[in-house]
Length: 230
Image (cartoon, rainbow, N blue to C red):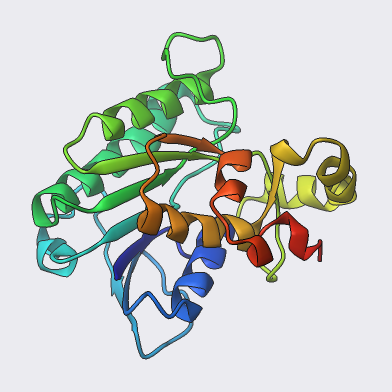
């Protein structure tokens, strides 16, 4: 399969890219970003693009894609709603619309978050905006999925670029084994998340909004929770 990856320099995107490059079922990876991921691979093509509100010039890159794994996103911390909506909604849909025209049968997976508000009318700003983005994507002609992980434990050395989250992970990292034992449906490892996203492309589940427990259930037995924790 040919896979397009957005946000490959972020924590989730790093794990997704690494899994795509090692998965034998993925034959080509097109990485779209503003800055380089700093690596090369025989099946990876990196496309550096400046205007993230217009992807029309990249149409040829998107033709023939089987999947788009959209891991691009920003924290809402310190941002007002118009700014956060412009980044979260406008950039995502700008990419999705071009990809939908170039590859109508593509599977488009959007990294959202647990607690996203599908009604778009809740009191939490980030949840409303994420819900708006999800709803727009799920209404598009391709097969769209909203991926809503809870707590993500990085296992492959991935680093978040957001200082707030970097500090939070340092403080709360010890919570992972506790949550994995007592609230396993709320947590997922970064490698599990990446593998599950590829399985979504292969299996195309009927359910379109997938949380951590749903994603873990898609994994083969040796790739899931039974394989142990890092």
